[in-house]
Image (cartoon, rainbow, N blue to C red; front, side, top):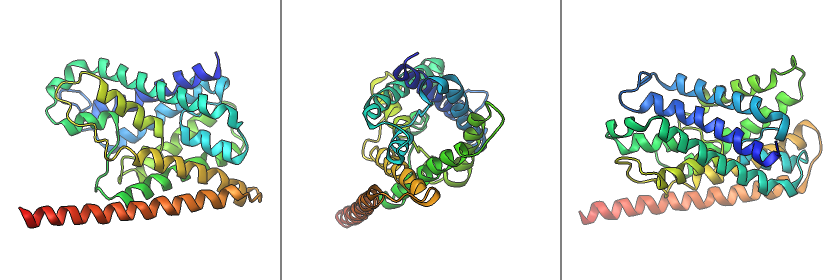
Length: 274
């Protein structure tokens, strides 16, 4: 199996099981309906573990553009392979979410809330606030990349690493996921969001494109910073990339504050004219 196909298949498995648990918990007339956040976080953790077990020997099982970027910035992955890995991850995520759509086919019509249907495919904020939502995704993905690198630096029984990484996903979900649904993976969010837009889902409503940049930009920056931070702090090898990424993060967060301010002023004007 080629690395490209491995990343595609592995990411598809990740989304089939990850978006699948979201569908099972949230769609009407599912036996798993209303089983809660712990079930969702466990489902995503096991989804990552299975995806890594499936294709780790072929591609390293990044399954996440933020991980690919983090490893590239750390110097553990060649930059020439980054575009093909990211393309495979996005395609795999779209394919995986289409399979989830087919698996739960009669449940879309049984579910009335369009927001619930979108939530099967993509993340959204508990409280809409660009700065906080972006920061949440950055922090969660930073922890993910530093956690993966830290796990890799330890010796475990052969074959146990993917299972430990799965528990890292559960930990991030339980501790940090309540703010934005913890995308921590641009492909995991944007790929299924595109599928949601394209698929003939009964009563699906908006794909919420106004928020879509948050779970792409936040994880990309958080994962990249995690890679250079690990190299600087854990390995004592400072690079200029650390300061460049930090500068970009500060600029993007400043822009998000301006967007929040504009949003508040727009809401205020609407209330005054109502």
